[in-house]
Length: 236
Ligand code: ADP
Image (tube, rainbow, N blue to C red; front, side):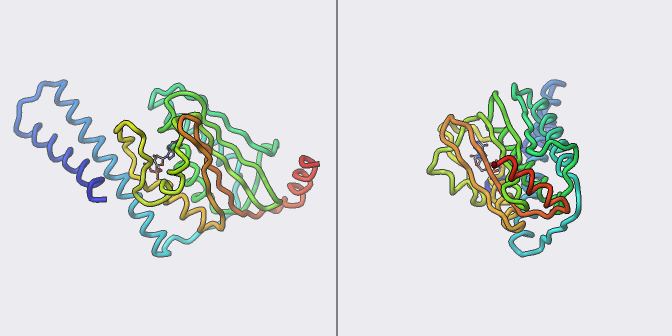
């Protein structure tokens, strides 16, 4: 972890020193300022991730289940992902697939934590896909079990790395040394949150074959009966 903190910290101090003590023309000035801002951002991300993981591990995060519309949540998450794709100037098509056709799907779960896991997975899918597609979908497996999938057509992960990527501060080696700028904590946090929600998370992938992350969580709905009949009809 010390490396993840030192690198952006050194960049902030080093570039500030240049701005304070050296002559920089306008272009250099803006360039160095941009580096300082970027390093500040990654430090803040890291701090947030470390706070999250320590809270989860010390049992301080309690779920706050509430009744909400899953379809609106998915639309909002997709909107943020779309903005991220645009800001990264990537040629990625985002596809959202909702199993149930109705406008709203009212369920009871912890929306904030479901959203956090989906953001983490989508963020990675976009980060590790140069161009292609990213697909966000859900299905209802049993009347009260939701299965989410985030699938991308990106660089993929070798089978021998499927376990370590869920560990803290671990990243899959990718041949070249281009650091993706991540903290290696996103999947560890996602896995802990999914476990906290009573579910599980897994990955299917291979090098250059894209990656599909799947997690399932139990949920409650007043419309369980109608969902059950929907699922049965579909499976018939
Ligand atoms: P971070 O993305 O911050 O490095 P994560 O814990 O979210 O940390 O992911 C750990 C590692 O798993 C990543 O560094 C990357 O090597 C690999 N990884 C995660 N998601 C994907 C993906 N969709 N495609 C390819 N590799 C991935």
